[in-house]
Image 1 (spheres, rainbow, N blue to C red):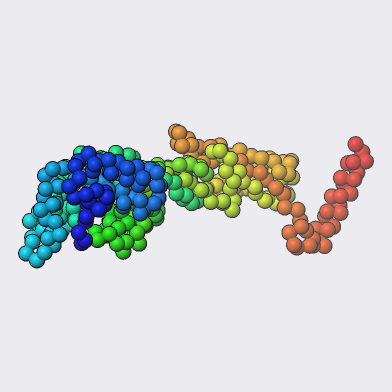
Image 2 (image 1 turned 180 degrees about the vertical axis):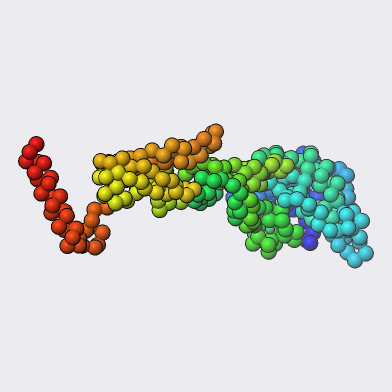
Length: 342
Ligand SMILES: [Zn+2]
């Protein structure tokens, strides 16, 4: 830990009166205010340093104590721990503020070793207090299969995000003013953890699932923002979705359309038997009521719309057999007679 020369920080003489200290402080604070230097970590730490110096030099008790210690503060025999609390780092939660305003946690270890946590806390109230601000909401995409969207349920999800560096509290600097080795001076660390997420039955592509309190950290005592998982529905090989309805194309033997019969229609849950009347047109659509997606609002279901397409003989890679050819020729003759007689 390095000795901090607060007079030097503000550029004032050792015997400067409070007014001069305030004047110097205001000038520097305007220059290094984080609002005017967004994202500038150097300006941010300078701003904190200025606030700390101002705090000490404008408080008669603190200034007297600081002056008395002088450069003897770390002389052998001087027990700085008697001023602090065991000299241990007392930061219990992420320190500082995204905007860099000086909160209680923004004070250096040097400051805290002299004035203790109590000093820092008291100072935090009188100095530029951290304005509590709720953290920003963040969005993350989550891929959901049609079956998952259909049934809903719990799902493990890997959440990644950024948190204030627990070592430096977000300042990016170590106690001795060097770059924090944990976050390499960025003030942020990346985390990745598994959370369980409830997928509501019926979610749609683009649906937003809110997970409270998993967004960006707030400023000061402000709460974290929320996380919104944005649903990306995976394409399904069989079904297309249209609102709460499902669409499906189904190949059937041409004879079923011509003569009528039954077909097994695949649904999301299994298969259903569909009766096909004789003389059904190719591509005709049938509605299977209640076999679509659940509706988010009330849990009722949309419909499954299935279009039947005839598979013509001799078109699926296998040529007609001679017997088939015979029969088709006969059929063709009949349709010719029909056409001629009509
Ligand atoms: Zn750090």
